[in-house]
Length: 142
Image (tube, rainbow, N blue to C red; front, side, top):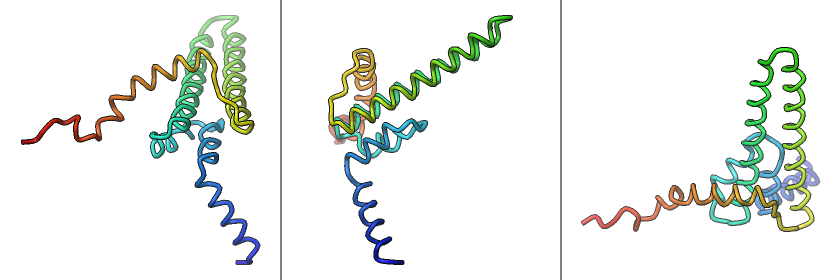
């Protein structure tokens, strides 16, 4: 392997271990790319918040796809409504993912009121699950 390629690979591996790379990977418009990042880095608040934003974005996308599938069952206007909802879901998914990446690159704080409300609800839902690994939650053993 040439020294130039080895240097490029070393720089790439160092970048992939940084917090910025993890945030960018979690915000990419790839389905469930946020899951491994959330699984291994859930203690860092910024990463957890962005991963939950991406989870909400993915959930909205699949919800709108389900609604589009239901609309396709209607007679006459079903195909038009289904295609329109499908287009809206794609634009919303790519738009929110693009906004997340754009705000990360400019180092801006992300605050979309509806998404932040849903993110707080998801955080409060998952907080008891995240605390199960603590010994104090199990009580004294004797």
